Amino acid sequence: MAELVAEAGIEGLPLAAGHCRLSALPRRPLAVVTRPGDGVRIGIGQWLVEGEGGVDVSDAFVGLAVEGADAAEVLARLLPVDLAAGLPVRTLLRHTPVLVRARADGFGLLVPRSCAASAVADVTAAMWAVAARREAQNARG
Image 1 (cartoon, rainbow, N blue to C red):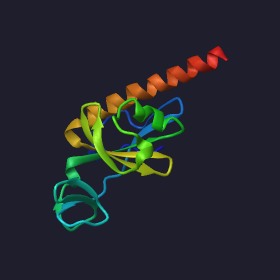
Image 2 (cartoon, rainbow, N blue to C red):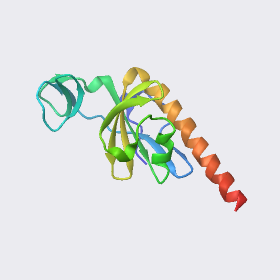
Image 3 (cartoon, rainbow, N blue to C red):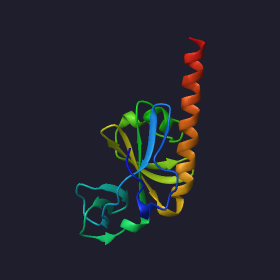
Image 4 (cartoon, rainbow, N blue to C red):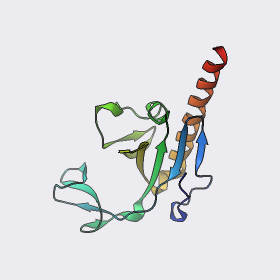
């Protein structure tokens, strides 16, 4: 599992429950630009891109990784979107704005730094709920 990124300011990561892991992603440079490109549209005439070249917003976001066999089910409890419909997507994780991107073994979440602890608590609760449901199903046979 990934190590906790010191800048994230989130204690208790990485965390695992059942077949799902939550960890902090390494900090990467992020910028908002006004030209279309390889970034994600975040507003009218605004795209979020990795790297330099626009308004630096690297300190505004915390990256989280939700990975494992149950990652999609965990996020399905929290996001009002169909993850199979295509990524990246900008939506809400319960009440927190989030940008969801696909990763090799799950999903990457970019959340505002000020909401990171709340997002971690929400994902953690969903992870435990999915793990408990799986355990109960396995106990029944």
